[in-house]
Amino acid sequence: DVPAARALPDTAVPANGISLIWPTSGKLVRGFDGVNSKGIDIANVAGTPVLAAAPGTVVYAGNGLRGYGNLLIIKHNADFLTAYAHNRKLLVKEGERVAQGETIAEMGDTDYDRVVLHFELRYGGRSIDPSRYLPAR
Image (cartoon, rainbow, N blue to C red; front, side):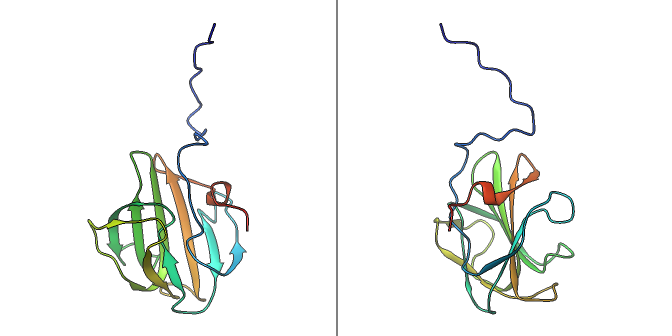
């Protein structure tokens, strides 16, 4: 007998939902807390390549969201999005398909006080801790 699948609370995320790679190299300087930090910050030098953490479609490329600078948002499937903020230069356009590991931007400090990639993972529109989905390094 297989027990009926129990409904997951809306905060639970399926472990098999998405497989991410680190979006850039550098030092993790700020973790996720869900309140003040809706993602993680990785510091490095300006121009460091920013990579697509998973394959998907670019749904936003611009600087219209205050506090994020030059921002890319990639939709991976019906549930998951990743966001890449404070870039010096965006290398992909809205509507473009990207492969996991493809260079999508150059790290910068737009709308921020230091060179950093602010990386967010959203599940069903809510920010969740991306470090839980990134490989150990």
